[in-house]
Image (cartoon, rainbow, N blue to C red):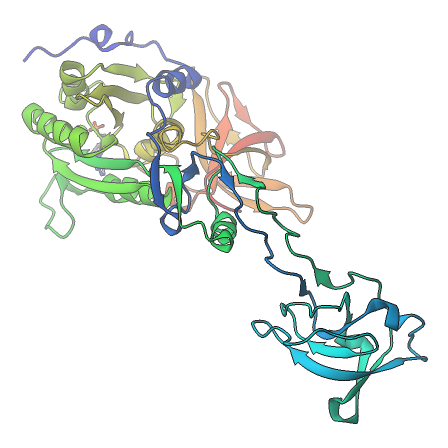
Length: 423
Ligand code: AMP
Ligand code: MG
């Protein structure tokens, strides 16, 4: 087998590509998945691809915002703590139980939050400003109210015909509440990408199997499948394949048919048995990159099959594969899911300790834990070992501190922080 030279694979050996160029290459080759109609309750986290217009008023009828007494506001004129207005209580109305008769002037109705306003009544005196008299036969009102007080009018939130949501909006729990409140049973959204995850390497052992000398357990597949799932996408386990060109090709071709995108790990660095890039070069339009970052320098990307399924060839080192996912695969998959905000939020933080480094032409992404000062400012310190095999520190990290090429950062210096978790 002729192993391709680095130049064949789309990158000059030793020439490091800026991360932004690598991201642009990938993002240029993916597109939002075509929209589909889906049940509203299955659309949480999906990106809307249509306008939603209200067909109803919300709320559908005027109702009380408070527990209290429904009245004609004019009847309460002059009521005060020491000089109550006393009215007969003619009925009680609760949510789901509308009044059967209108309220006449000089009368009150006991009313509970959410109950429809009785015809005639135009305000509610909150219960805190009232006093039950004669076992509830009459009420003393200790405050005057203006028309409309404590009343939520029909259509106060949305009117029939209002534009509610539009394309590009991510469906949050709040959106689901609004859509359910409007009786919208289905919506047109970009579907969740089906993302296949494949591990490669002769040294890897399936979970639950004994580990022979020289073998290690597969950690990347579990982590990448979980990342796909936590992003709201459909994770497809494509298994574990040996360092065998035909086996890798078969798995990638199969995955390209079943999935919208594939994540592989391993087999993309400079070594002789880095077969993922060899396969992608033969069956796809490989671009192999050496990116000016640490960790996650090697990265291969290609599109495969009739549907030009994107294949993200992530490096094998566990930290590198996850960092590569965050910086290169996740933004592209978010684009496929229809999002316009593709990248993790980047925020300002302060180094709580020095982050020394040597110049090497790369931006270092240091795994850090963050904590907030009493004034809310973020301070970061190392999450632990910074080798590309130190997965524990990655697991603990709240984010990646960006340490630019050069001599490092001193304690107290500002640093940029790519947030991976809530702090
Ligand atoms: P590679 O990129 O295939 O040369 O792998 C680089 C390093 O990552 C080697 O130490 C591999 O054993 C390790 N590695 C590759 N794939 C995995 C995996 N799925 N889980 C854990 N470690 C891996
Ligand atoms: Mg390998």
